[in-house]
Image 1 (cartoon, rainbow, N blue to C red):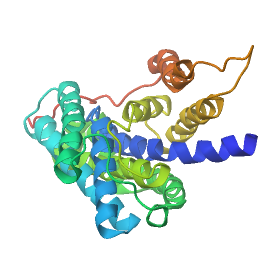
Image 2 (cartoon, rainbow, N blue to C red):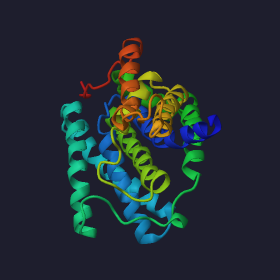
Image 3 (cartoon, rainbow, N blue to C red):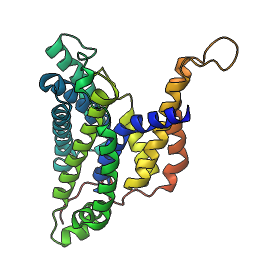
Amino acid sequence: MMMQIFASTLRVSTPLIFAALGGMFSERAGVVNIALEGIMLIGAFGAAVGTLVTHSPWLGAGCGIGAGVMLAAIYGLFVIRLRANQIVAGMAINMLAMGLTPFLCKTLYDVTGSTPAVPISERFQSAPLYLSWGLVLVCWFWMKYTPAGLWVSFAGEHPEALDAAGVRVNRVRWAAVLLSGVLAGMGGASLSIFLSSSFSRNMTAGRGFIALAALIFGKWKPVPTAIACLLFGFTEAVQIRLQGVILWGTEPIPVQFIQILPYIVTVLVLAGFVGHSRAPKALGEPFRRG
């Protein structure tokens, strides 16, 4: 029983880890990325369509990543180039993805609910799980020991100092936002061609926001953030196992109460830890050269 829950926790945590790492790069560089939800959703759609066309999960994942990068580029255009409000622009991107994916499904497959099922032989079996944890270690090393990692940190903490050192702050932020598109797109791909057999409408179901909660809980650091994703993954694995379980009498627990468990945990974690986590000093502030 416990081993099954542990294995399920690792699997369902995988999309969260990808998205949270993407959000980490963006926010450590000073750009709030509320758009993770929409980027994951478009990534899930792109991966499912790409896999159906190419019959390869890797090429399908590449399509999901490409879709995620394109949406991240639109977001970056508004918040970095045009200096729009990052929260408002992020929510607009989420709504765009929620409306665009059913439209594209209708255009390609004449349905708005989901894409055709991807055969099991053409889906990932375990590769995204190993890749996500490998990326946690790579991101930890990259942020801590490489000049580029220090540039990202300074872009979010002391952008004026980075600019004075001759490094273009907005270029660093552009790179971070696009990288967040790569990782969140892969997170979406792991939903549709790893955890599921197809893309379905609004299948992210708030996972982009849960990834942001994990990022705050992990204090914008790769390893603690990944551990926070495991916590949220555990709650999702438990709610899956509890569906249909009878705890008293002859009636099972109402499924609606079980399904809200991950979101209740998210709210409690944010309520308990958001005041204790220090965000990057320049987070959410557009950079203007003096």
